[in-house]
Amino acid sequence: YSGSSSSGSGPSGLLFVGLIAYGVIVFLKSDRENKNDYSPSRFNYEHIDEVSTVDLIQKNDPLFSASKFKSFVGTTFVGVQDAWSNRDAQAMRPLTTDSLFKMYETQINDYIKSGKRNVLSQQEVRDITFSNYRIDGDQEVITVRVNASLTDYVINSKTKSLLSGKKDFVFQRAYSVEFVRDRGTTSDNTNKVESNCPNCGAPITATTQLECEYCNSLLGNSNNGWRMNKYGAWVWKS
Image 1 (cartoon, rainbow, N blue to C red):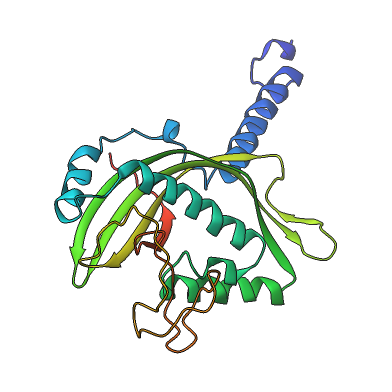
Image 2 (cartoon, rainbow, N blue to C red):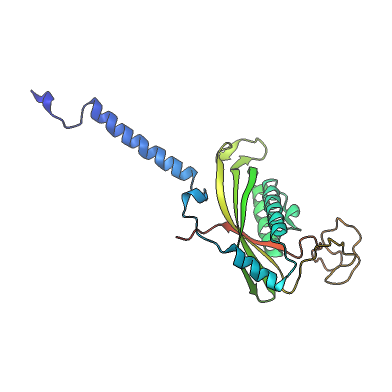
């Protein structure tokens, strides 16, 4: 009577093996879909001494407002993301440093040439934390952690067909975002409008003017000189 063998080669054994294989496939698929998900729930939420960081900033700039800066960070973050998604490099111009602008401009042009669009939508900034402040040569540098949620996928810009990602998958991500300004700049909470270029002194002919017509320096004092300089995934510490 050979049927008494429990070798696992019967239907129940095959089903068990099949379920294991299915589970592995689902796990790998899920892992691929979440490979760029930087949700705080997936990591140990390390302590950041935000109070000490803000204290350091205010030693050099007594009028610095942490709440106003966070509001500026949130607006700038979403503004840059929207500009990227719309493939509109010029919309980033007043928000970023020259180096970051040029990098994004090149990447956006590559997307345009290839007929693709990286869509970022349903954006929500959930939390902003001061992480670091330092003096780097002739610049002040503030690094913040931005926790945000968004969808992230790529489409054909003409046919709108999906090329990669999922339109309905909302990522929870943590970003490291760096802002810089000239050392010695102080916060001005009066929101005054400059009538001359701070670099060369040439007259500013329109309130919507982003660049000096003479020296090409960026204009605008509403951000107290701060501009986004670096942007990437937050590196979680164990």
